[in-house]
Image 1: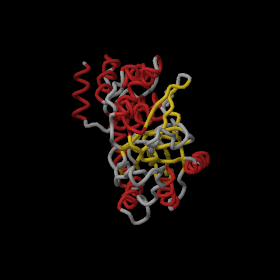
Image 2: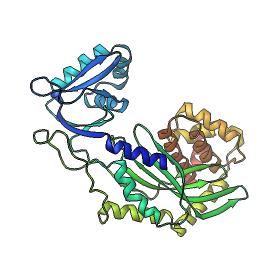
Image 3: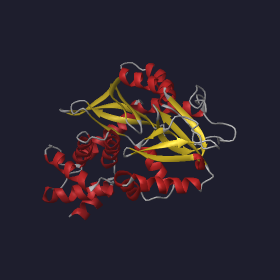
Image 4: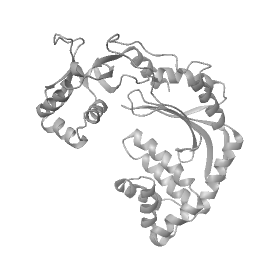
Length: 351
């Protein structure tokens, strides 16, 4: 957490945001990479040319309706062709956009009505509320290109489900500064014996990044926004409510009962691979990921719905992408908490 806090403060001091006309942008191939020029009416750079982040490239691809695979191929194999495509469409576009910049790199190419709720503001809103709780433990903190994650537990709220299975109540705090998602505050459950969490999909505080319109006619570099999560605001109160609900004993007991119920929903050992394929496919686990889930499940002693949910979350710990691993933790809970009726339907389909 200390390392994350240090990085949040460093980024706070090294980021900038600009409102620009798209036809005032110009990309240039430079040593196999692309750099972005922000030009004035005379064709002069208004700021130092910017490197371009991967996510910003994806946003430009979507904005200009250039198919992502083709955009990526041009970027990797023929950047000069990509500059012709991008500059051609930029020059024909009189719309305005916001450029989010960090350390000399454009990390986001978003709408000029994008509401900037930054990691610093989120952490300043959430951490004092958590400070009112005793014995909160941070289990994982990460800053990826697209999101910030803080995962923590409240070990005082715990139950033993089995001799080797303890469930603790926890919380996920996540945010994106570049348009990859909203501010999210979500409960989670955590098993200390396995160092494994699942994100509960029932109660969520969410705030989309949509706000007032900025105009390039009156503003160029815009100041940070620091009012969305102030104490007393509607969303701040929603955050408070979600945190308190996440650590509500009655709600936690309901989730524990859901875990117990999932352990009673057995898997037919006649076609384990088919059940994994059917269940995981229903919840958007890819075919390549299903192979890893099957391996995790086969090595476990849980031949039931909980075992599949657990295997999905465990597989997430084996992959490089922290973003996708967190998504799989949410999918794990979706599998765990599905209705018995749906579970029976999927098992019948697998058979």
